[in-house]
Image (cartoon, rainbow, N blue to C red; front, side, top):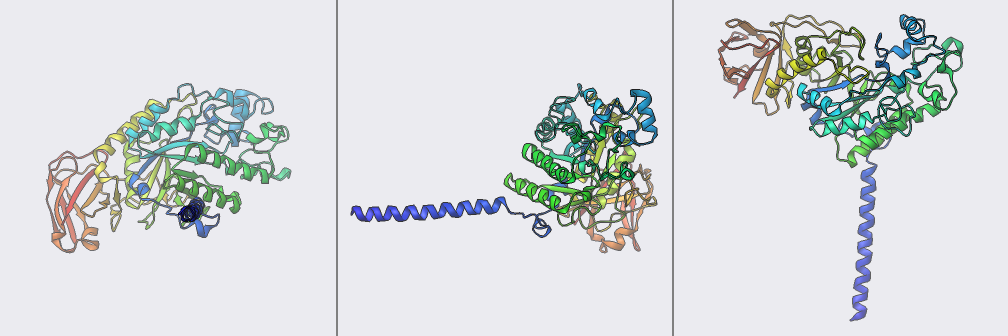
Amino acid sequence: MRKNIFITLFCLSIILSACKTNEEETVSKTETTYEPNWESLSKHNQSPEWLADAKLGIYFHWGVYSVPAYGSEWYPFQMYRNTNTSKHHIKTYGPLSEFGYHDFVPMFKGEAFDPEEWAELFKNTGARFAGPSAQHHDGFAMWDSKVNPWNSADKGPKQDITGKLEKSIKSRGMKFITTFHHARNLQRHNGDPKEWDTYNSHFAYGPDFPTSSTDSILSKLYGNIPEKEFNQYWFDQLKEVIDQYSPDIIWFDSWLKLIPQEHRKKFAAYYLNEAKKKKQEAVIVYKQQDIPSSVGVLDIEQGGKKDLSESVWLTDVTLSTGSWSYTDGQTYKPAELVVRNMIDVWSKNGIVLLNISPKANGVINQEQRSILAKIGEWMKKHEEAIYETRPFGVYGFGKAKSEDGHFGGQSATIEYTKDDGRFLKSKDGKYLYLFMLGKPEVGSIIDIGVLARHTFYPEQGVKKVTVLGSNVEAKWHFAKRNFILTVPDATMDDIATVFKFELN
């Protein structure tokens, strides 16, 4: 009897051990779902549904370059070259050999920075995701870094900017984005004097400048280190942010192509595997052709696509009319212009990433706040027609001419009017939303030929049309190959009026 019990227990232990081994193997395979090659990485869903639902995100250019508040966030690039910025710098702060970019770091204090208040501002504007420029081209990390000695926890503000924002933003139900621009931080002059000011290096070398320092700390800020070391440094900083803050989106600026594919693949595999372990649907955003479209989501700077896109895409646009970072005398786009161009992006399957410009001390000025408040009011009033919607069969109609943007696609500052309309539809297909990009006149006729030609051949396709927010019904009818909508006696919105089509 005892012998049988022993044999049974022995067999059971073998079975349990085998199960444990299989379980460990399963976990191990799960943790390495994505291998560092484009074929494996392409199995990832590069555009999850939450991103298509979100429509609007907010980020900001805020860093050491905000201190001089002159020219743009490219101040560190311009100051070491023969430019107006260089002349301004020498006149204001002294010779470059005596006052370098690193001397601005102690002046970047961020004493008014309030992550809770910022996150609330972003949410009230209507953003569904938000976060910082984690590192711009200048090599200064906006997080608590053990990898980069030039970071916001150890120097400047002496705060973990990214960490505090992550908590504030996520606690409000928003997704968290970190943007990276540091691929061009490496000095790529290769010791050749003719290449000391090469465009692909953010800092010009200059033997008389601190940019040529070989000091182990200073050289990291200025990117004056061997390329092999820099490429690992580039990856290690990304890994650190992934491990510490679990961003839902990692967004890359141009020049990512300067980083060898081996490192780009290694980053993507690490990020996606970590996200899967944390049950995140992570998104990688790129520009130009720096990452395959099967792996990431394309971003078009300061513009958008000219036609409806089958795939989801992004555009990053400024609230200011010029610099991405705060500069003295900065001016801003009116809310009407920003919202109407956002609607155009949404109608073409795009998502907007709106940039704001805090001052060096952490103040977001009242001019920007007033515009954001106006955008937020409009977003809240029309949220039914915005979030969780999808493009229609045709993006819209109108008279506004498509102007070319500087980075491909069309400009983000097209002047739309009451004669321009854009469409979105509910995910369940029960409603169609028509956005008129201006203020229609009561009693006027909106002739929507594209509806008759592309969709509603049978008249019974439309049940009724109302003004969103008022429930006032609008008269409509089909005439030959046109759909005729009469603007009812209701309050029209100054920014954009939305008509809600209830479909059969």
